Length: 180
Image (cartoon, rainbow, N blue to C red; front, side):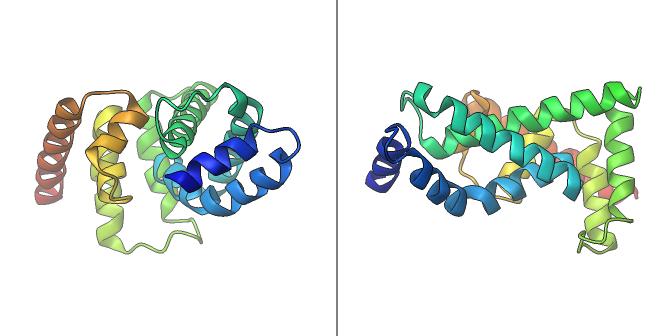
């Protein structure tokens, strides 16, 4: 935690901001990429969103008050940016959210960077059938192994609500897989 505080102080100091930001990129770029990728699914879209996320982090680091961990704050920005991207893509393609989810999962099969097998594709289809909040909670818990307290800070939701969302998501995924 003290390393994070030190990094934050350097990020918020104009004399050390650029060097500290390079360090921040080195520390979090891969994790944020993977987080965004679980939401938007497409590599190129993930790269675009990730770039926007780091621009927002850089522009807004001075407003970070430390009410949560820096990590959680950045993940909240990444999550919101990814969701905004999906909303925009849905509008541009004139698709409902569930139609967009289905489209994105179907595109995974053609994605050369997707290294999953048939079972992973079925899991992705099952996840795509969930409501958005359940998708986010499931992905953060299952793929990123984040604890409920951290997810709570990212999604600004109570731990109890997250546990319920995760439980419902798992049950729905199990039912989907059994029927496919």
